[in-house]
Image (cartoon, rainbow, N blue to C red; front, side):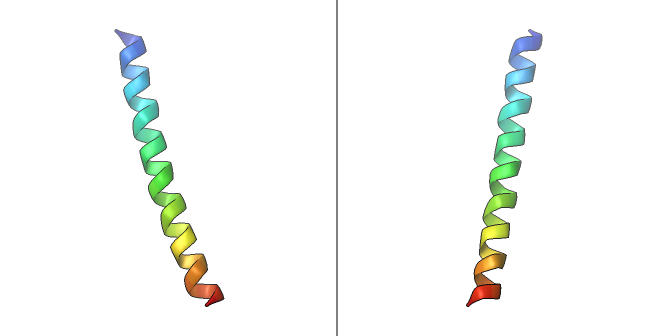
Length: 33
């Protein structure tokens, strides 16, 4: 169903967002060390 597809898409987006946030956090730690 389209609902399941939307759920998978949102999960994928959350995962990508999490990765970007982690990378951003790590790069900020590099700057402020």
